Image 1 (cartoon, rainbow, N blue to C red):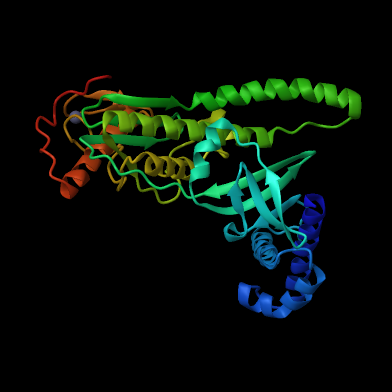
Image 2 (cartoon, protein in one colour):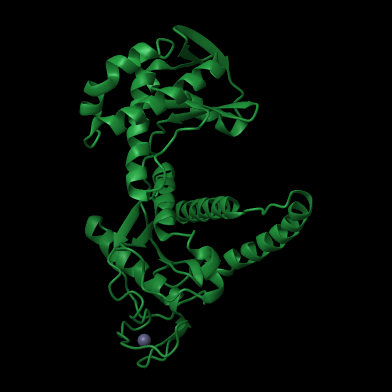
Amino acid sequence: MLEQSIEAFKACVNDWLSAIAQLGEKPNRGNLHRFAYRAIRDKYPQLHSNVVQDAMNLAIEIYRSWLKNGGEFPKFRSDVIYFKGVDVRIENNGLVVPLMGRRVYLPLYVPKKYKKYLQYKHGRVIIKRVDKDWYALVSVNVPEKEPIKPVGTIGVDLGYYNLLVASDEKGRVVMRVQGDILIRHKEHMERLTARRQERLMKKFGIYARTNHKDRRFVNDLNHKIAKALVLKAKQLNRAIVLEKLKGLKKQRRPKLLRKILHLWSYADLIAKIVYKAKLYGVPVIFVSPRGTSKTCSNCGYYVRTFKDDRVFRCPKCGFVADRDYNASINIAKKGLEELRKRTFLPTLKDEASSPQGW
Ligand SMILES: [Zn+2]
């Protein structure tokens, strides 16, 4: 039944795409529905009406991304079927979904670490076939934790040489992730690919690609960085401070990193930090990036020009530090100001004391 249903869903999405091509105007849920719903609905009696609707929404999404990216007119080929949350019940370690006009029970294997999510209200369910295996992607609404009352802040500077440097307002380093973790990964993957390519070339005369693996690695890395940072903040009872960034920061990309850095993005890491912080009840504060990299975190002097890209030298007090580290302290201080405006924290005395942990 699942087999037949995903085939029907695939054909249905493609019919919606053809309808869009015939529509002659920009498709939206209203005009497209009026134009073709009746005909398509009648053609697929085996699909639930909400599934036909979801096929339409998916077709509109596919069409819009095609408008943006160009190429051949899209054809939907994925082995999936979408269900609205209201049409699915989760019970007895399984899903009850509408298939071929009936409600069908599908037993689920739920990995141990995901079991706790079954208690929450679920949303959309996507059932997907990968080779001979079937997967259910179930979205759930996890309630946000009651936020902690922070005693201070952790400033986070994101960059290329250091993907992330996090420290508190006193200069104690909380976390540091160096950019060369990406270089090492890239080199490792290139060695693997070289070997694989040689084998594949000999055997089949084809090339192997690794791009998707790089993407998965970067995604995974950002998850780990975000989680480690948020747990650390929770443990130290501090709010996380990030810079409001408009587009990419102006920083030269190290040559070695260019090959893989295009896959790594600030926006993605920031999104993951914000998401996980909500989950763990850690407040996140955004501050303006103005001056954070050029101000001396020790004495507050504003340094206009730099000879060295990597090292911060203060001509006034002689403070010398890694530039990203210096910036992270400034970000932590700005965040603390912001936090003090919101709550009644004791004021920071002795702001010019020399940073520790450096
Ligand atoms: Zn200084």
